[in-house]
Amino acid sequence: MSQHTKKQFDEVIKHCQQVFENKQKDYGSAWRILRVPSLTDQIYIKANRIRSIQKKGERKVNEGIVPEFIGIVNYSVMALIQLELGVAEEADMENETALKLYLKYLNEARDLMMNKNHDYDEAWRNMRVSSLDDIILMKLLRIKQIEENEG
Image 1 (cartoon, rainbow, N blue to C red):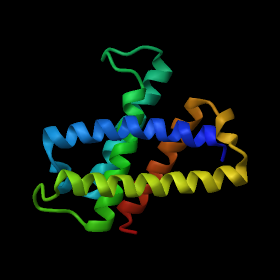
Image 2: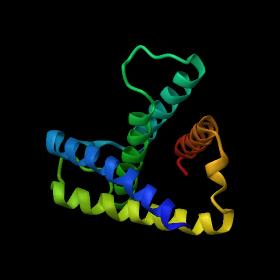
Image 3: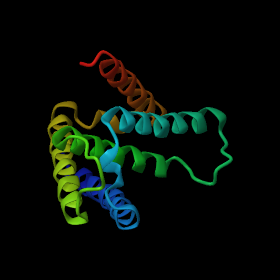
Image 4: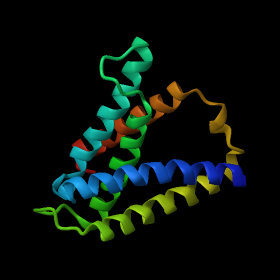
């Protein structure tokens, strides 16, 4: 992966991290009570809103698709944390611990992206945003099916 791509990834993640940290300060770790299927549904809602905006070409809520992609990143990390730790009965995580786990999973995601970029030569850069959203939705439907089958 080029240093340019790594730098871009880090810039995007820094923005996602800032949103995560701000919400942690405001709400604490209330998300710790969410079961993984609930997080899957939240990610689905975000991806579906992106698709809806793309199809309609307009929106009534004054937010574009960027906050939705940020939500997809952040809810995805929350789901990974829940898979590792299990669901809590209350907001049981200090902000510092949440951030440490958050960064752990984003670093793993960056490493995976670097390896895939080596093999695919950053082909994703030539994809349309709508295709990326379609792939996200397809993978979410697969995950939901796995969850329904208790797999």
